[in-house]
Image (cartoon, each protein chain N blue to C red):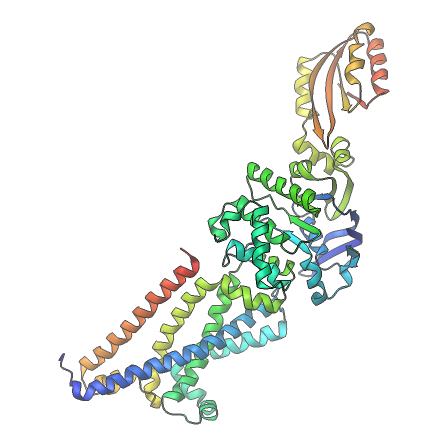
Length: 337
Length: 221
C-alpha cells in the first residue's frame, strides 16, 4: 500500500541542514495497522507527511497504491490526497463550520454533488457515533468527540489509507481507548489501511499489527508488534517496550532484590509453549528450591510473553543442571551478583 | 432651538450628513474589498504561506508601508494628480472618496493580514491534506475561520474612515467635518460644531455596537 525506498528529508535551518528522515525503507501492507513510534523530534510527523506529499522528499521515492507520489507536482498530488485520509493531534477542525460542515468539506473538494453529500455526511456521523451532533460547532464538543469528527471527515471520500498523526496524544487514557477502538473498527469494517504515528507504546500495543521504531530519522527496528515487544533488539525499542511492559527488574530493583535474597538470581523468558513451569516443577529432584521474585506475563496479538526473575537456592551443580534444562526451551539470563 | 438657526443650518446639516455617509460607505466598500484582497495576498505570499512568493510579498509589504504612514490630509494632496486622472476632478465629494478608499485599503490590508495570521496553521494543513487547492482554501476557509476578529477590525476601520472623512472639506468634499469647521468653528457658532460632533459620535457608537454584535455572533460567544 505504501512503500518507502531510501527516503531522506532534510530541512535548511538557517545556514545548517537538519536531517529529519534518513534513508528510510519500509513497506506498509494493504489492510494492516502500521505504527511508527519514536520520541518527539525523531522525524515521525515528517515521515507521515511524505506519504501524502504535505512534505516533499529530498531523495528516495514514496509509492502509494502504485503511484510514485514523489514524482507528482503539487497540483497532480491533490487528487491523490483526496484518496488519503488524515487525522491530527490537535484535531484541526474548522471552527467556523458545524460538525456536518466539517465532514462535508472534503466531499466538496472532491466534487460531490450537494444531494449526495448530505446522505454521506449522515452515514459517516452515524459510523463514528455522532449522529446527534451534526449541527454542533467544534467548540461545543469534547476532545474525544472532536477526534471522532476528525475521523469522519478523514473517511468522507472513502480513502483506502488513513494517516493518524499522534491522534490520541491530546486525549485522556479513557478517550484514547475509545478513539483507538474506532480506528480498529475503521480498519476491520472498512478495510482501511491505517498508519499510526505515536510516541506511546500503549497505542502500538492496543491496535497495531506491525511497528517501525524511528530514532533520529532512522528506522532502527521494524517487525510485528509481538516480535518487537517480546524480543526488542535495539536500546530504543527496549526503552519503548519498557514503558508499558515492566517484567524485567531495573538495576534499582536488582539492588533491592539482592539485599533480601541470598540465592542465585536468573531471569527466564516466558513464551507461549515455553514450559518454564514444567521444568521448575522438577527443580526439587535436583535439590534446588526456587522463589519467583519479579516478573510479569502479558498477552499480545493473542500470544503470551514475558519473563520471570527467580531466586534459586541449593547446590551449584543442581542449579547449573536446572539452567541447562531451562535453556533448552527458553532464554535464561543469570543476573550478575 | 439650541441656538441654531435651523432654517439655514437644517438643510446644510442634512446634506452634510448624507455626504459623510456617502463618502464613508463607498470608501469602506471599495477600500474594504481592496484591503481584503491585498491583506490576503500579504498573508499567503509570506514565508510558509500557501502561495509563498518572496518577491510579491516584499513588494506589497514595501508599498503598504510606504502609503500607510502618510497623514490623510497630506495624502489628499499627494495623490491629487492620480485622483484627477481616475475621478476626473480634484474637488468635491467624489474626489475625496478615491483617496479615502486608498487609505482605507492599505490600512485594512494590515488588519486582514494580522487576523489571518492567527488562524491555526493545522487547519490549513488539514484542508491541504484533503486535496484542497490554495485558491479554494483562500476563498472558502480563510475568511470564515477569522471572521469574528475581521468584523471587529472592519468596525475599527469604519470609525477611522469617519475620522479621515472630516478633512474632506478642504477640497470641497463637504460632510459633517466641513459643516463643523465652516459653519461652526469659523463663524463662532459653537452649537453647530457641537451638533456635528454629536452626530459623528452617534454614528460611531451605532457602528461599534453593530460590529460587536456581529462579531459575537461569528464567534458564537
